[in-house]
Image (cartoon, rainbow, N blue to C red):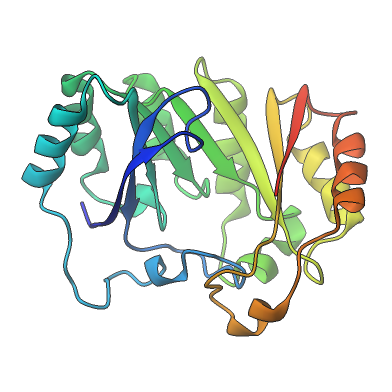
Length: 231
C-alpha cells in the first residue's frame, strides 16, 4: 500500500463516526479541479510511504479513540494489496469507509461480497458523455455504470457526490447526473474550492454562490432520497 498521508482524527470524513484518514498515492483520473493533486502521480515525489507496520501499530493504539478509518486518495482501488490491507484492518475491529471514482467495479464487488467495507463514497464526475472531458482521462463508462449499480444495491451505507466547478459543470450536467443515480439513498453536491488544484489556472476561480447550490439541491431532491450540500 502506497500510503502517503495520515490524518489522525476526522469528525467529518465518515458520517457519524470518528476516524483516522489514510491517503493513498496514485489516481487514474486527472481532474483539473482535484484538490489532492499531489496524489495523482503513481509515485510520490519523494517515493516515501508509511510502513504498514507503523499504520497497523498506530491504529491498534487508536482503537477506542476512533471508530474506524477512511481510505481516500488518489484512487485507493489502484493499490494492488488493498484487499489484504482491509482484511488486516478488519481484524483490528475498525469500520472502514472507502472513497472511489468507481473505475474498478470488480474489486468493489469483491469488497462488498467479503464484507470488507462499511461505507462507500463514489464520486460522479459528470454526465457519461462528458466523463473523459471532465476527468482529463480515458474512461470506460461501462465501469462507472457498473459501480453505480453495485453501490445502489449494496447492503451498506453509501453516498454519491459531485464536485461542481463553475465553467466546467452546469445545470444540465446536474440533471444528467441525478437521472444516472436516480433512486439512490444519498447524494452530496460539493462546491468547488480553489485549493491546490491540478490545473493551476483554476486557483483563481470561486465556487458557485449559495443560491445556485440550493437550486441544484431542489432539482436533485426530485430524484434522490436525501440530498446535501458541502461547501
